[in-house]
Image (cartoon, rainbow, N blue to C red):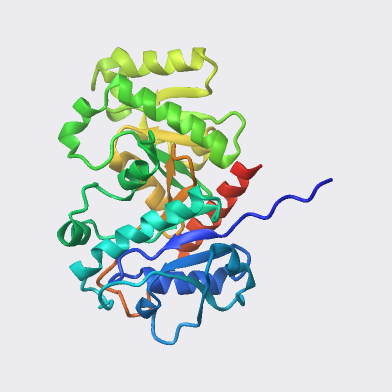
Length: 328
């Protein structure tokens, strides 16, 4: 039998230099060692004082770096990193690092992209960043890929069909076309990135008690139920609409692989309750693997060395496993 080809290192972007990203990269390397190979892309001057690092020329060179040393693909920035104080001069560097990581994966030099947190306002103020966030920029770099956001952990995977909009706008934004697209991208992503041959998808209702037969809302009976039934008739393992208040206890979670939810909090409250430090943001639908920790820049604790690295470690592990699944 021919030995499996080793999975290339993950490209870990530096994120906002004034946040906790750099210290999380160092902690992740200390925790993972050589078990999950990755290279940090950023300015070595932005790393915490005393960090043991080694500059490499390509991601593949990270394999030769000692386990306790952070492999660094150098990317010089315009200004120093001041904890908690984002500098507009560094905004373009943050954007360029993301694009560089994507180029490495697209060029076959890295296995996946894992992104450390950015600060969208800092990017807009300093470089006129024209995207709502990482996901939209990555889709742009991928040539306009049709993507959805998935939050994943060992105990639960959720996909919000609508994301960062006011709750009052959800009933208008959640259309049959939107929900069908999200379900289809999710189903394909579960197969390609998580290795599930027949992913089981649970679809949450929009209203309390999934509308209770029309007594508390009509979307479920008018179109969500018929849409789910049509997709099931095509052969997709999908069921719903289900009452969101009974979808997330242990027995219910055992019956599906991913839950598609109507809006942001319906999806994120359960996963952040069950896996606050281990939740991973995964972009489904990209032609490459992308993960990210499920938290922000944490300016209030930047530079103090107290940031919890669990989500970054989980994101790197998941990126490596997803890349291996795609490689197989």
